[in-house]
Length: 72
Image (tube, rainbow, N blue to C red; front, side, top):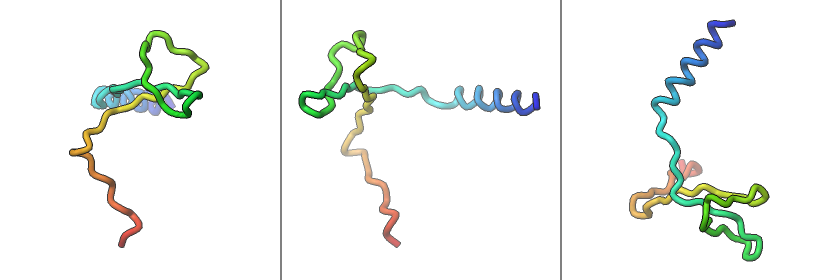
């Protein structure tokens, strides 16, 4: 039993070492007035009652759509 816990802990530790940390380019909040996402102007004043979305910018020239899995 203890061996399983030790191996799990070691695996978790090494996985955290090799993974790149997540870095969001933009923080968005849900605006109820216009029913859309808006950028947060001051991230230091977040309201726990609002919904937030961490967004990552994607370069449209480098992005390729995934292959269609329905085609055979």
